[in-house]
Amino acid sequence: MSDIRVMLIDDHAVMRTGMARLLERSDNITIVGEADTGEQGYQLYSELKPDVMVMDMSMPGIGGLEALRRVISRYPDAKVIMFSMHENITFAIQAMTAGAVGYVTKSGEAQELVTAVKQVVAGKSYLNAEMAHKIALQNMGGSDNPMQRLTAREFEVFRLLAEGLTIDEIAVNLTIGQKTVANYQTSLKQKLGIQSSVDLVRLAMKHDVISH
Image (cartoon, rainbow, N blue to C red; front, side):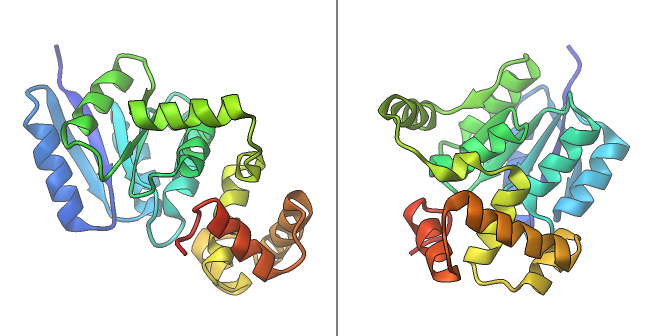
């Protein structure tokens, strides 16, 4: 059986080194490329076409979610696992909705990433039992999480606004026009039923999109 070709995208070199060591300990996984931004990750994916792309969710620049959206829109069959520090289900649901086939938290068991890579190569999706359980409970409870109504791009704009970035800064971050960001801001307020930036921050805190 040929080796599984994996690409790593994370803005922390130490984290990438640790991930590479962990994965390459498995006898049939090879790291074929690394990048430290979403932009580089998208370009590198186009060049290398790896079997699996493991990407951090929160990075400077366009970020993991937007990079995921770009990869999937160009390569619908891409197998992308989001490797994230966010343990709440809002981020996991956003990632999976945007096209990720796996979501692994950085606080989980080290071996979990290896398991996730092997599962997605076999054509399955991967969520750890705890995360899957939380999502199932929320769905059963019928609790309305407004974050689930947002597209990947809307969610990124929402998150950056909640973190206090200006429209200009978000435009630079996501490489889109300022007018586009302003339009997103307006539509987010309508979609989420909020009036002010204070309401937006409160909503982001309530759903653990930003820390308290």
